[in-house]
Length: 503
Image (cartoon, rainbow, N blue to C red):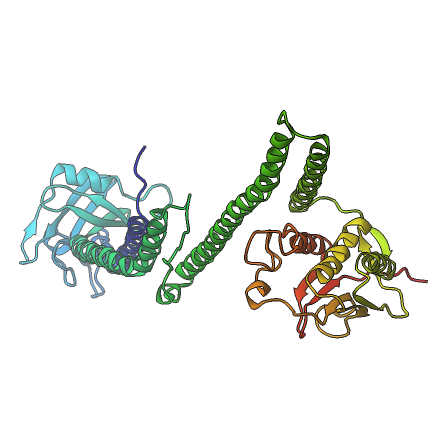
């Protein structure tokens, strides 16, 4: 493929072409204008010379003078009277034709000498005699050849029928226009050279920021983006962005793209890290019950195993199977929520769900004190009742499992009055227990996060997926969940209120 021309070269060529075109137009107009002006001056002189020549050559034979008495006929004017008459400049040609036949004529040089016309020159002049009833011809340019060259020719017919042809040289016109043409050409060439140099320097300086932008983009392409943690430190300088509007647009767009790519790569790395940790934690969670099931199965398969021991082992195997089933169900629920499913959108009164969930928690934890503040107005939201009930069960279950007996758990529903979420429904679950450790507050909504630092279940903890499921469900409903302030553990859930139909 042919290598494309650079923008600098294209701009230089365009500037050179424009300067050349302007120079040519200006030069042609100047030369033509000067030529026409000088030709008009020559024509004015030619008309005057033609009138004088016609007066001299038009004396008819047999004319008399004004003196009394008989006078002889006046002779015809001689060549010396016609050629070189007073007022004629050097190079003037005068030729007299009678009945279309050359009678006399010639031309006078600058030094005053008279010269004859050649037969070829006589024929050329004869071709420009008046025809028909016309008594004169308009000035025309002819080439007389030899040492005469180009002349401006005009002719007149006298009352006596004599045709006088007068011609003036165009050497001054040709010299002036030629000199002007030479000057215009040289000036045009100099202007084109200067324009090329100026355009090359100007475009070199103007494109310097753009080259730095290209260098930044090339540096980014050298960074491996397919794996690991990626940091794109290269950016277009603010000075280059402010240099010109075009470079600024390209530099700003490139910086925005790099910021977007870096953010996407950071999120990808975080997602991969979370996925690796998730797989490792899930493998650990599943490996423990599987190892337990295998151990009890091997104990039950011994030849000397008693029936009561086998039944006990079967019960333990069933319990571990139930725990594995619960863990798998939670993992499937998270996978469903991660896939952004189409949630069931029903109008729900959150007060009913809270009342049912608190009643179930009270039956499961009678040693705790359960307090509800549901308000008098309906707390209408749109969503899936089963998923929202799971959120309530997880919050209340955590409050029951991670606090000592006698702890008071308060569940309150109210409306957000101020801020961007004004009008939303707010659910607060708070207890006066020991609260969340500082090390857990930041990671409480991560998957497999537990209050205990150990993975052991001796502390009565769950799988560590409950709060992650709550977060995924709330966000799928367009809401938020966060850890609130308080001496104990406080969780605040905000859900968009359902639009009430107009009456």
